Image 1 (tube, rainbow, N blue to C red):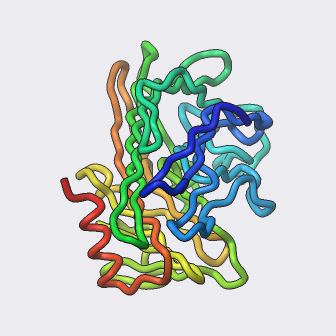
Image 2: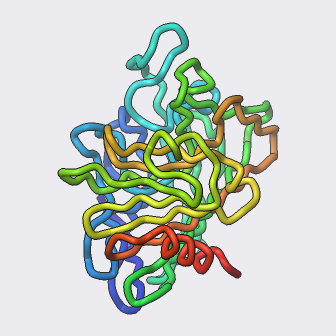
Length: 279
């Protein structure tokens, strides 16, 4: 892996971004952030873990763009289930418009079967919140660059209930015990999965991640949450129906993630989430 970018907060390295990962096609190669750490240095991401080798730290992953897999691994096929298909796309880094230790702006091409389907503009920034917490501000804009309508789907729209993953995704650190997941209204995976919430927290042994939607569309997307099988949180671009993108049209989402040392209480998580997304 080459051409890495190291993000810093308060003079400390907190994340490494790999724009050109050298990975097999089956993993749907795509730029990713790993490792991401707390300010105290605790790693809170995983890259190609044994349980799901196509999970790549933090990034944007979509299992179905007009039938092409930009998530990695098997593809869920209606009435057939998870199936190995030769349908994997690649997110190709084109250029950085801005790049420094505090963040970057990047252009990417989403390519499958030799054709560019989407062009992405990605903006990422790392900012200090407190002495023990910082925020990763992640915006992605997907533009249909073809002459035909495209649509984004998920295993849920293809017949697998409860599996509406696709969009921003954070593969968290796996520990001996499963992390706790909670929002302002609910606690536990069954209570928060597939539901919309202004913020959602994932708390491990000595760390907490707080995910907050920073635009109206992003807040409307339900959260995809896993704690028991593996620790991961993402957004759901296509929770119940496919998301259409007309030629020249752009879909924009912005998620701000608080990365904190220690296990935050509900009121602490809410306070940091509000601070992270405030202008």
